[in-house]
Image (cartoon, rainbow, N blue to C red):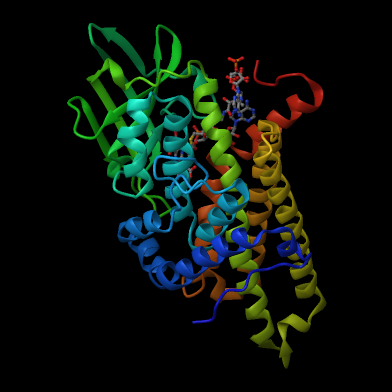
Length: 388
Ligand code: TGC
Ligand code: FAD
């Protein structure tokens, strides 16, 4: 199989450290060797390649940018490059890693008690325990502030009631981080698999992220020890700061899908003959490739700068929104263009483009829809919130 060599039109590799390039190489090789050979079948069958989880742990992918507790402690650019390479394989694999690392391990690391950190983080870093993040509800997606799921204190316990929907990893998770209102204030609760009153159902019928588990979570008088509340945060900024961590990874991840589509379309255009010539020789086809490469390069610059700012502790949530919004939009646009460039072959799963294109429809919607990020930027520009 041909080794993927990346796309670097602007010499950005010169801005990466040796360690960052090594990390990227190891995940790139893993994706070429272990993911790409099996992913189309998983997508077709609607199954998650769970056999890869121990290797993700060994490679240090899970919670890679966290310090201590068996986490790799990499910088945010190396972490971003990991997300990029995983999503070049499949958005479902990157989703798994995003949820595990940014949406469950990060909040335990940032807001958990020492006992919670010791109990959950090392096993999650090794891939021995899986997490899911329950924020979205059937009636509250873009507006999580309205959530209905509630918690009430009862002696030495909290009792949860409500339903969460569209939860990645839900049915395979050992622990669910569930956001619920306690006396009207949003709080995070760690609910272990098997707790009485907690059940999950698999959501089927997806044409997108088929190689990823998506579930509903149900809580009915679900009683958890009082020690399972995240002590370090209250209010909506708890879940929203997790989202900022995950959206950063998605800004990089989308570049992986983008590169896979660009690379495939370019190779196809070079070898597909019509009217006696490779289609790559036609000006309209070249224009499509030029547009893709331009947007890919701009997206790479954005992601790299966001990573350097994050490493300096200076990246704002609004800057992350801009990068997620831009990079996912252009990755999806490129996937659709690449699909067109392959003609009828673009609608088969002999090529990865259709799968990336369908996956990116979810990525466009989750972690804040494109329009929600537009409004976050609108507020940053004008100082006026469109949500109130
Ligand atoms: P608002 O009044 O603006 O803010 C409430 C409090 O939160 C703070 N805050 C943030 N903190 C950290 N990071 C952010 N991005 C933050 N945004 C806001 C804010 O400062 C405030 O703090 P305080 O101390 O004053 O209380 O909240 P709002 O209710 O007006 O909502 C704003 C809005 C609409 C932007 C927000 O609700 C939003 O982002 N909605 C989108 C929901 C979303 O993205 N859901 C994703 C669910 S998880 C998922 O999709 C996983 S997919 C699997 C995968 O990742 O692969
Ligand atoms: P809605 O909020 O109903 O939005 C519908 C449309 O209305 C969108 O176009 C939106 O942009 C638009 N809209 C909404 N409000 C406004 C406004 N004020 N102004 C203008 N337009 C507006 N959630 C989790 O908590 N955990 C997970 O692990 C998770 N994984 C997911 C996996 C998949 C495969 C998918 C598809 C979703 C996942 N989600 C998860 C849920 C995801 O975060 C939500 O789907 C997303 O936040 C949007 O919510 P919604 O689907 O209810 O759409």
